[in-house]
Length: 376
Image 1 (cartoon, rainbow, N blue to C red):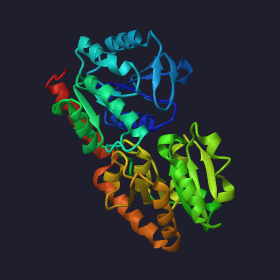
Image 2 (image 1 turned 60 degrees about the horizontal axis):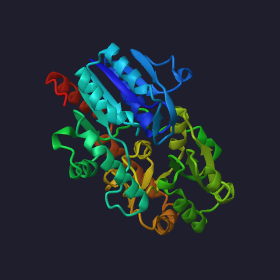
Image 3 (image 1 turned 135 degrees about the horizontal axis):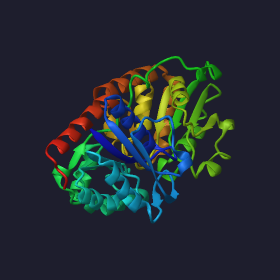
């Protein structure tokens, strides 16, 4: 089967990881994959084994959204007509191209699948979550035209159902993590802090990630010289937060780390993973921490609370700072908590969130759409 995958390769974010991980496994399993993405010619990787790699021109792209160049739609149509794939899978990049895809694929008689990533907070408790809700409202009429839209949780599915997407057009296939790579093991990074208790955050440094609530709680608790908070990631808030919260407080800024082996090594060094987000989809970073047997603390944003239920500590998205002021000292006073919760987190991932298991579900969906020639 030939899959034309429309996704992201840069800048580094969860969508990039999602596309890379799934297409690599599809290639391993004998699928032909063509990768279409917004990029300049020099961004094309010679190491990938895709049948074809198509560069779509753009005016602007970020971790959040992309503005295509005017000619990108024509290039996409021409490329799909030439490639003649059995199915198109779009890992939606929050771009106007997302809205044009149903018409393009209908014209070419190709089944079209979407993965819908935008984060959400079903309780709409703040302005940011309301903005995300508008994204869902905007997309719902177009998702109804896709043969299938993949979402990560029951909550996300219910939200789209309320907005008018037909039930038979939605499929729940959660994010998954490679549990062979993301697992406990020796850590070279740990040698820098051999006697320290290490806490880690991994993700964008952005408003919706609510990092300042974590920093305020960390400073308040005075965790001591043997506790460090590692920050893996970067974003537009880094320049304003880093001068205020830094090594004087035991906060170590490691920046964005694209090298996967290096990130895994750092995760293995840590004891506790913390994700204080106000809105989420289903965090791959959280799944990676859980798979590495870290004790995990995350807010009940998006599907993260559902993932971590009975396998970690789930916070309300309101008043995160005060909740963390209570929880952080518990890990210092009771280090055995980390081991216990880490085992539970790993087991939870093995039960439901393995990458290979979820790609198998994706294969079943592909086969059903192609066998029944379900287009729209």
